[in-house]
Length: 91
Ligand SMILES: [Zn+2]
Image (cartoon, rainbow, N blue to C red; front, side, top):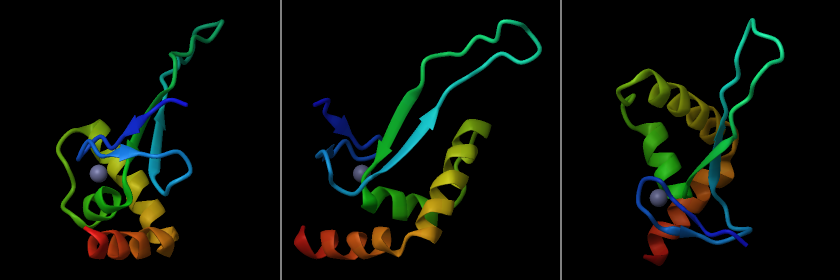
């Protein structure tokens, strides 16, 4: 199993535990055959996902795109905010 770390706090994310993964890849448009870059996976622990989503928008177009995706997820899934509360109690 590959070990994943939260991009923001560097906490190790164990397989099967709640986390938010952002996938990114780039692709050429208007050229045939299309070329695709390899996909990158960026992970955030629930605490960081929630605090990022609640926080102000970051700088940079790519960061804002990722921030919007995380905000969507945090808004959709109350489990993330619930984990956030529980994990804070456990710390
Ligand atoms: Zn984190």
